[in-house]
Length: 74
Length: 168
Image 1 (cartoon, each protein chain N blue to C red):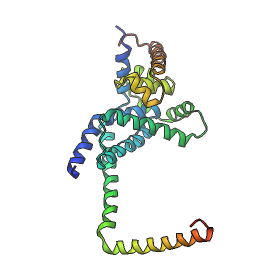
Image 2 (cartoon, rainbow over the protein chains, first blue to last red):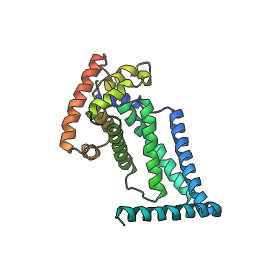
Image 3 (cartoon, rainbow over the protein chains, first blue to last red):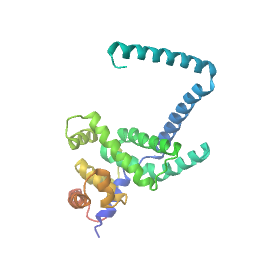
């Protein structure tokens, strides 16, 4: 008997990933997550880095304020 | 949730849904793009778990996300062109090597030979989504989904007959 629902399920199942793709994508996701976590740790833990960031942010803030005054938007 | 609990939650969602999400993108665009887009979809799953935004229904949540990713991808890659034409260009550009040899080949070719919109609809239907759910994903009414599904199924059946598949 012809069963188009069954045929459809068979057809779609052929587009499923291999076990290698399943594992590879999962590893890539975990690597991306780890990278994101480590960059956050750098800012919150390392004091020297935080000082550098604070200095940069202060300078950026001053420049932004100066820029706003020059363009009359501040 | 602790970091370990988050990873366990992610692993569960990934194990349950990755294969279908990948298949959805593979049917729409082919294997290479499917891998990238499925990865992006599950990065969003991770972000949701990481920020304790747990939906009631992961399956619907992930597929809503997948359909949005598909639409964004088409918009970025083929701005100004009709989305269906764009999807066809990407799909046909992919290696048909994703198609295996053997008895499955004719059935799979019958699906691959349909227009992109029909392939997408039939794939979502094969995953067990209702017309209402599919309509919500695609932002069309449930009755429009039913009408289009009926036509798509008819075309699929005709393609199967062309491929010589009469007994499944």
